[in-house]
Image (cartoon, rainbow, N blue to C red; front, top):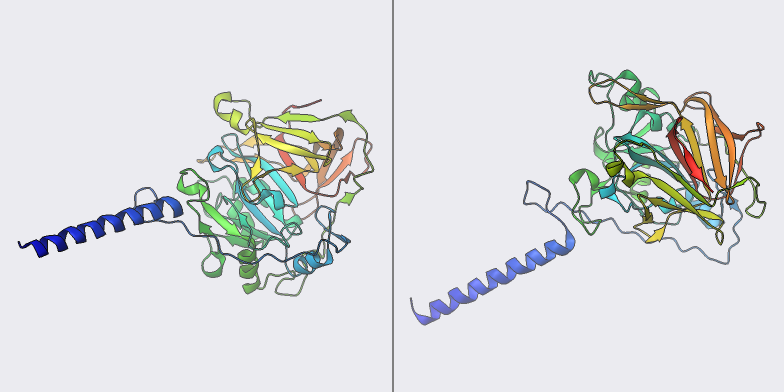
Length: 397
């Protein structure tokens, strides 16, 4: 081998090693490898320009879901859409979640093993948020499905418990079957093909490696566009508006404070078993006088939204007590009775109101009342509803 050939070989080896190093560096920055493969699976979030909202425009438009006031510019966006009901998980590995601070209402209940799951209702709060990331999205459960018809939304989830012909799931727990029977506007990212699959795996959403099931992300504008392709905008294929039969809750003003026992600090657990594990799912709320809201903590750590990097603040915190049943099917599903009646505690303005809830049918609105039978007037703003077993204790002071 002459010296010139040797130089070429050395030069080629240097180029190869440099390219390998660059590729590895790009991988370290942009994505992670799915376990068991050598393929980078991260998909970047679709970008879009967020609408510019003039701060000088008065906030005169009431959000039907939580009574908060917005500008006419924002209402002009949301009236073209219908609400999104999105299943978002809460396993410790999946935190912090993306997009929860934009939710108008959040429902929380145990999915399995003491691990709670959220269903966020996104409508007014995301009107000016552009193609906001909502993540990580997970599967449906029947007790959430039994709430969905109150809003006639696009229901966004990744699979769920029990098709109609599944012999391993108790009929009372068959969420996917109920979705079909209720004729819910289904945006299942596993069970439907084509335009419904608008969500992507974001394996680099967090600065840590997580299991594959914790990586599904959906995007507000993509979901709205997909729904429109199926004839589901603010009206359905027959021209019926989503809010034709919607019953809005009642709202007061922030300055009109309610009275009751002091509740500046609230804490509760979903399951008392296996405290070493389930302690990650204990919830506490701390009253913030400056904003007249409650700041959420989970497992002893303040909950933040990855999109804003700010704590989760909610104007109203509701405890909805429900009967908990451990079903004896192969997959040991849970059942929470959210249709019927039960007790409730409503926290706002730094105090607690003892009350009740009632929901006559799957499509009927859940109504909260105080101990005198008068319907609760919530503070305008985000509402968090935790569905707890009826025997659980909530502490506050």
